[in-house]
Amino acid sequence: MDIPALISQYGYAVLVLGSMAEGETVTLLGGVAAHQGLLRFPLVVVSVALGGMIGDQVLYLLGRHFGGRMLKRYSRQHTKIRKAQRLIQRHPYLFVIGSRFMYGFRIIGPLLIGASRIPPKLFLPLNIFGALLWALIFTTLGYVGGEVIAPWLHNLDTHLKHWIWVILAVAIVFALRWWFKRRADKS
Image 1: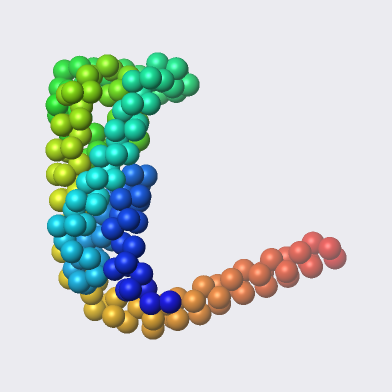
Image 2: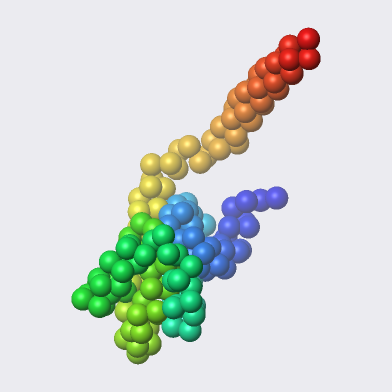
C-alpha cells in the first residue's frame, strides 16, 4: 500500500467528500498534501470549496424545508438560536459568508440561514464566495504548515513505530493494574 500514490489518485475526491462533512482538518491536510507535491494547490482549493459549498447548500435547503420543526428540537438553545437569527436578519451577507468560520456554526449555520427564509438567489452566490474564501485560507494554512511538518513526515515510519511501542506499554500497564485490582477485590 503506497500512501502517497493513494493520495495522488483519490485525494481530490476525498477532499470533496471530507469538506462536505467536517471541513477544516481535511482542508489543512489537503494543503499539506499540496506542499508535499502529491496534489496541486489550486485543485485542492477548488475541491474543498466545492465540497464545502455542496454541504452548506444541502443544509440550507434542509433549513428552508424543515427548519422550523428542526429548531423546535433545540429548545435548550433557544436563546442562542434567537441571537443568531437576529444576526442573520441584520447582516445576512456577513453571516452567510462568515458562518463557516464561526466555531460551532459549521452545521447549524446553514440550517438557520435556510430557516430564516433568505432567498436562494442571495444564498447561493454568497455560499460560493464564502466557500472559496474559506478553502483558500485553510488550504494555505495547511500548505504553510506542511513546511513545518515536512521533516517529520519523511520520518513518519520511525515515529509510528515509537508511538506503537509507547501505546502498547501504557496498555500493558493499565491491563496489569486492572488485573491486580480485580484480584485484590476477590480476596
